[in-house]
Amino acid sequence: MKKVLVICGTGVATSTMVASSIKEHCAAQGIDVQVTQGKVMDLLGSTPDVDVIVATTAVPDGITVPVVPGLPFLTGMGRDQALADVVSHLQ
Image (cartoon, rainbow, N blue to C red; front, top):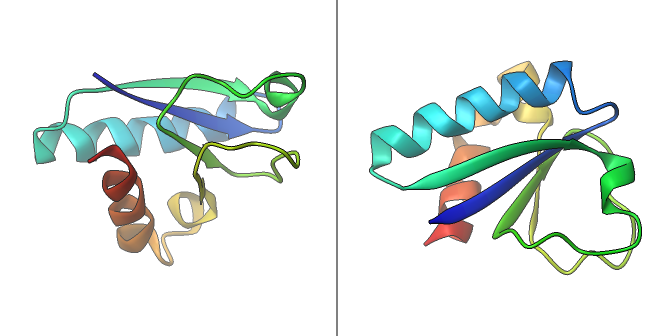
């Protein structure tokens, strides 16, 4: 199973919207994925064991996991490309 971590400032509102979009898209693509949510503070100290991070806020330096910008999920502009980027990191 592939893992996606959705990061926002507080780990509540925006990450919920983004996580829902990613889950729906991956299910439609037949990708078995676990999507979790968190806040940017969760990234301090260690890199999470995930395949990709989708972030609606700045990510600390030193994160070695691929990061996809999450803003397109909120604005709709560039959403299809962001979903394609997430899928490419999961394959």
